[in-house]
Image (cartoon, rainbow, N blue to C red; front, side):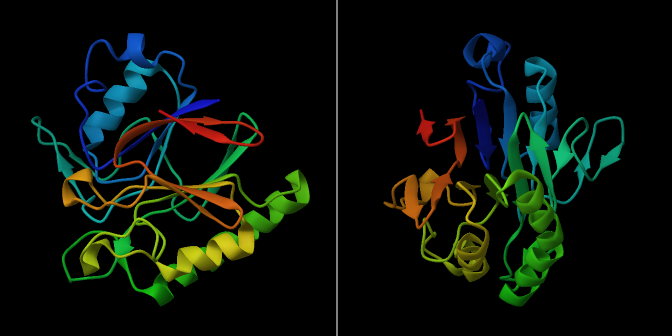
Length: 216
């Protein structure tokens, strides 16, 4: 299954009337946060595929021209502290960033993120009993600590995500938050034990199979 993964940046090649010609073979969209809701709604409408998402630290409200106030993108499925099975692939999500100020938006301390992980744990155990594995893909906004981190505290990763990978061994952890414009020279994909960590700031095409992911 080919997944279009998006995060943080509006990409002209995606926000285009030609999106169907460019990405018509995509089976689902995975969003890692900090994108306008109208952008995700456009993608879902044009590609006619499900969009699963978590929120970034800047995702709060979106006010439309007609005065409507949205707290979620329409037609998309939130995976915050939960998981779904999509065409045999188990996908879960933990959005937000490391807490760095008191501004509105999903920010968490390490303890708060661990609590969110334990809130998700019963579903993961059910997955293990039913499917023989806890999770295939974990969507996050922030990276794990020490992997693809940005140069400042707001873009530091979570130690809790290292714990998650140690305990539940998802095949992929896909995150955003660390933009190319920050000049970070980290690779876009890094192997951590049994998990391939992928930074999708902007977008990536990820082909999820039984044994590997192929990026383009």
